[in-house]
Image (cartoon, rainbow over all chains, first blue to last red; front, side, top):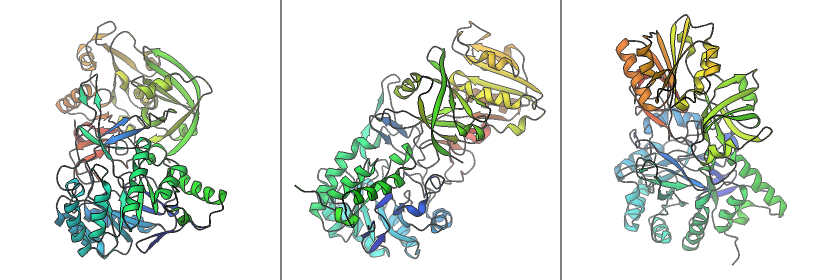
Length: 302
Length: 258
């Protein structure tokens, strides 16, 4: 039985990763999870300088999920290189660094800083955070803007580039095709879905930012649909995510066309989710006598 | 070491309207410190996130007491649990109160509303260490839960909003009415109370250690949901935002902007 999956020439020991922003750089979860067992750690977004993030409350619960508007609080690339990279190097797992920025120059600066770091296997470009007013999402909701930033980042990146797509668009396949045409090596989807919650007793928004990104099991069917549509539209590999709580959920994404999957909000609910999903996929392969996990990719039948 | 466990409910009763008192059997009790908290997970998967609840009391390194208010669907579910029910918890979380500063000192232990419970284990821990334990607790009305427990560990002063018991008003009014003084303050309660304590501590030039609350998702420092503005650069993000779950929930009042 072979759990390995390959994306843009990078081979992962299994297809289970962490979704950016739900796992820090792994430090906080190393107490619960053997990071050596993960397919990859996808880090919290890192910018060229520290970002303060949004006012609180930043999180709220909604039916079957949650809203967040953290606003990409992060220490910036200097601290990240000094502290987070050496921490992650101790582990036998692949590292994918999520990169955020307000301008194209911001992104390029971070991408260049990471270029000479062999511990970084891939870059994931966050052009889809719904909680930051400048930059970020502006690049992820217009196909021409997405094409432009992808092309520019590809000129500077030494590692393969994953563009993380927003579901908050009319047609995600248009965005996927634009990223592919601009040279993206892979796609990850979906980022959170913009939502809102109102506290009727206080007559206030549950989140200080008013809107927040929705994640959790309630969004999974939307994510599976978007992964399937995107897989039909592009040739480049897809990392699928959105509400994965169990191995069964993860296998749905693989069958829909994802080459790997990420666990996000469910890390907060059950810190052992990643490991349980890995074990569960193995058990599924065994149950059906499937040799390679890659045999599942896009194997849904009409 | 933090751990997620399935614990067993030993007992539960309603000790004031909508205030529940639950004892659970868990090995996490062996590491629990006053001011720390646990995350409690509802079984109903529509309510996904853990509920952070303070530790009220620790017994024989094998049981924890939590006293909480029914505030929504999750806590409503917990309130229906009876003896023998299982309950998923994550703990122990946060740093707790720095009790070393109370050694030989005259202390105020202040609790307000649903911030009262963590003061109990603190009072128990400081008994015999602090020189003079003055417990000042504020309630809405005559439902002065945990009062009998507090009597065992110090001199208790009560404030009630409706004036039905003790001083009419809040915990600060109780300090004035009884002409109380201290060398150090430990407190947990609603934000207006903590702001008043921060101001008071600055005026009389004594340290105050206050326990903060904020909406949380992970409880372990990863999601960056529960931050508070700080005076000094925080060690995680370097943006003057400390994480209440892991850097707190107890902070020295002068270190935070509330």
